Every structure is written in C-alpha cells, then in structure tokens.
Image (cartoon, rainbow, N blue to C red; front, side, top):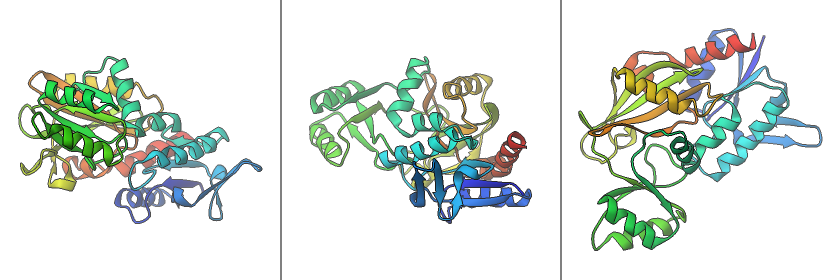
Length: 294
C-alpha cells in the first residue's frame, strides 16, 4: 500500500478532505503538521514523529501553516530537502516558495507582463503617502497574509500619514500598496483554478456589501461563474510563470479597464470549487498525484 503524506492543518477542513480522498483510493495517508517536522542533516532524513517523510511515496502540500509568515519559508526549505532526496512533492517546493511572499509573487507577475492593479512597494512613509495621494484610495497589504488578514484601506487626506505610520508600526516595515480598483459587473473576485497546469474551473467570491473585500472571512460567499476565454487565458499565463504548481488558484478581478491579476495561490482552495462548482477538488488532486507516482 502506498503511503502519501499530506502537509496541512490538523482538523483543517481542506486538509481532511485530501486525507479522506486518498484513503478512499486505497492509499495510506499520513497527516503532517510541519510544526512537528524534524530535519536530520547527519542522516539526510526528514521525520514527522515516527514517520520518515523522505521514505514516503509522495508528499502533497495542502497548507504549510495556519497563517503565512516568514516561518513558512523555513518550513518550505525542509520540503525542498524532502524533494531533493527523491520523494515527489506536490506542488514543487521552489514554486510554492516564490508564492508565499506576496512581493515575490507579484514582482514575478509583472516581470511576466501580467496586468495588475497599480502597486507601490516602499519602506519610506513619505513615498507611501505619495502613492496614496496618487491612487486616491489604496489597500495596504502585509507581505504574508491570506483572506485579507491584516490589510487596511487608506484614503488620501489629513489622516493618511498617521494611518500609514500605524500600518508600518504593526510589523509591516516593507509596505505593499495597491490602488483600490473598481469591480466591473458586481462586487466579485474570481478564483480561476488549475490542476497540473490545465484549466479546471472558476468560482467567484461575492462580497456582502458590508466590507471592501470579498473574502468569506468578512461575509463573502462562493458563487458559480463562467469566465470568458480571455480571462482563462490570462490566468493560465500567470500560473505558468510558476512551473511545477500541481494545484493552484489565480485571483482575478474584472475592472472597467479589463481583467487584472491579484496573485497566484501557493496552495489553492477546495471549498470554492465544491460550493460554487460542485467539484470534488480533493479527489481530483488525489487522482492527479496517484497517476504520477504509479
């Protein structure tokens, strides 16, 4: 019987969906919490309790940590070692590494000529203030976050400098500042999903009108959405900049000036595809991995 590790969050919904999908396919799944992983350089092995990760048939990374932080990059380095020792890791750790840090992800997107909302990165408060005055209204984003955690909207005006200083003092020395964009056709953000680089489906996150963002954490909900061919092509081009991503979701926004990309996800989500599209993404992902290690 094959043994496949699932890196994720103990009791996390998506993690357990993947564990169950593997078990239903006759595989012995091993749930791995990277907080308990141990890299032994002397023996060139990686362990999770009594399980040798470097001896598993494969490792699937569903979630590296409950919240993103620079610590997640250290965990990813351990998974790089697992991969280097010959254990297949899905997705490729090098690609995931580049996507965890928002700045690393989006600079790669712009270098790849992917359209994005206007963005400024700086450590200087005066430069940040100038960006806000230029944009009129801007979203300040931590370099490590998901579901809009830690993000704040700052508008040009008398209070802007103090709000910028507060954001930086909250642990955001490097400030990632993005122009607030208008949504075309409703308060929707799109999740364009790919499996093995092939288009899978698209769901939308629809805001409830009470928050500037559309995340489910602040009242948004998943709804079905059928994108045009140009949006799928744009998202496909964006995710192709990170080869080796087995399963990912590209965040797209439709603006009056055309579609733009926010980011490419390091891990991708199952819930939106299930709720909005009726797709068992966990099962599809399990099948994809098992086909490649058969």
